[in-house]
View 1 (spheres, rainbow, N blue to C red):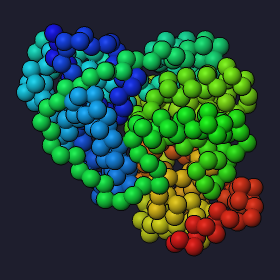
View 2 (view 1 turned 30 degrees about the vertical axis):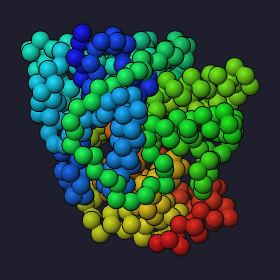
View 3 (view 1 turned 60 degrees about the horizontal axis):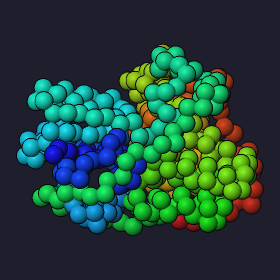
Length: 415
């Protein structure tokens, strides 16, 4: 009979979760620690995690707790120093088996290593998963240090190798209960319904019920509404759904209706997400440096007044401003918008690209450390972009993607 503690990180669901199926007489607890670093400051913001992202997380934690209660247990919620809280729980619960997902980010990896080593010294069995990949990490046809610099090369290698996850992890049939600190309640409503139930509902609806997956490639660059793109990213960011679950539903759909460019393109986007994870594993802390992964000389402007115009949607460029107002009010922005506003900040205002990355970290409900920082590196010309000086003409982009001005009118009226 084992006493198991599962550490929920960006895996906030009860399906596709464990590396092994617990025995019927095992005791299984689950905990989540709201990291005190979320309240620390960055050079441009007092709180790393802003209210939009925090509210989306808190609502998701309540849903997770409800699902665990349905299965006989509850979510043990703590707040503070992650390492300290986890080690205290292991002692308090007399844990002999500890399971966690390896999250990426320098701080996240450091937390994992410190906990892992401390528990090994105590004789606790430790099991680690890699659940946030579309590809079957580490079953890829190259070593991490040899990750291709160009996405197209990366994609072709993985597609030729066929290294895609299909086998889900185990879904616990029961959880055990333990005293918990109360989970705080969100302060505001979100444009996205949060949690693992909503995430799964979104996947099933988009792929099967509405079959919007069949037109994704044609609509993905639109700007208004909920259904022009998958909107899977907020649910992937917190692990309300997994890449494996999305892939399984796509395969089921393709078996019935056939693959087309759009169903393939959703997998293509999941590969982009993986690509930035491998970029982090290859370069680690370099992705947070102004010079990026290419060690390029960089002397950006530090102009808080200009930056404030950018993040509050007061630059005078209607397309940039509309996108920034949407981000400010909802915690979300389309991929097309993100590329344009990033290009504007870096190339028009010539401000440190990291300021934009920090603002996105604060504001985005779908913030993912690798995708966010990897994309900003890319747009700033200090990352994996094979082209030099990728500058977006925001006026042309507005004409191409908002020809009637409906998107700009909608959000500029809300300023």
